[in-house]
Image (cartoon, rainbow, N blue to C red; front, side):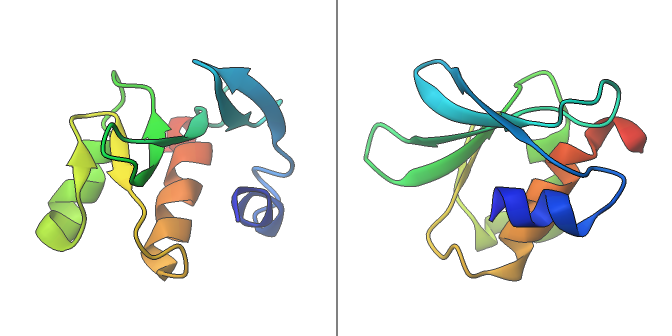
Length: 100
């Protein structure tokens, strides 16, 4: 899904897969477009998308969707339904974060 979201927006284009904190991490190879999104699991085993904790990404998403989702502080978004289109919207906002 991360690669599909990136490829659907020509401004983002491609993403590069790396490892960060022992987890798969995806970022655009172009500077100044977005920030990385990591795939991981919370301590309770729930899949999460993690972002840099000094961004406003989680706060912005929480302001928009509130308690519809579970969060891990200011760095993680629980993904209980990967088919929810709001997840793709969140990924897009991460990969294009610096373009706002």
